[in-house]
Length: 335
Image (tube, rainbow, N blue to C red; front, side, top):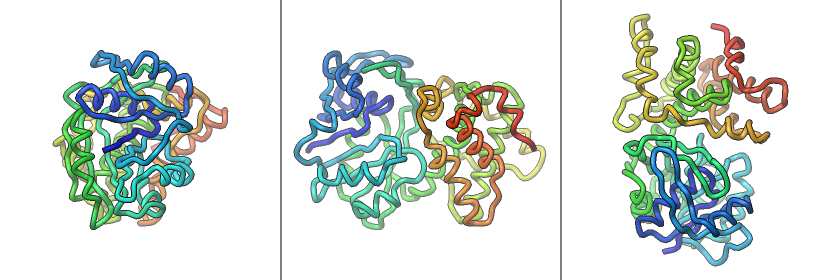
């Protein structure tokens, strides 16, 4: 069986290191030549909550050859159509592409490859790229979990092979309600990644002060409201029922929800959103696929999303050079 991580950046470098360390064979592909060269010369270096170095098989896209049974897609999804069309020629006829991206990318990818050849995976841990060949694991070691599923009624039988590879890093939950699990992750990304990018801080710092916490809470509430309006059941994350803990319809539950937020994110408090990392490097972000997905679905089901709308607006203004990630941006939110 041949497997590859395409887009082995901060998360992909760590996943590839774990799989290789635990006996799996997988190629790590990245377009950043400096990063790829460092992986070839020095192996993958993992720092942060765990520290180790692992020799890995690293390639540039030009060095890819043959066909793969499993492709893990971990690029940003702004260019998914072109990326997946390119990868189609490297996928075996009975192979499967597994997207570990944010948002809801499976529908577009399925239209290119066929839904039965696409699996989706949500990642419950985070990482930050430190430098060429070096990634910092910013989540606690007991939170390295995955949720794996399909939008197809007849998913690829390779799902168990994918599960076995991912289990070389951490526990894998097979989803019956994959769309609900996608929305669980999207809710967390919209709230914490969105505000991490807006404020220029870690996940933990987004809920450190009450005014920031109220915006995070409002983003989560909008996500839960649009799912309710659209008939989507949001699934638990790592055994925690997000809706039960954080949804509210009266002042008392709202107050309790506010108090719980710092505890909910404590294992990932050091995580810095990939969107913020993109902004720091002058790159465009995935905000339209994260908070923007909430806004788009809200319009579809007739549910307003003013706070998510504001996050999208602010991040686009940062991309345009009108603003910078800063706690001062909190003043732009009006309740």
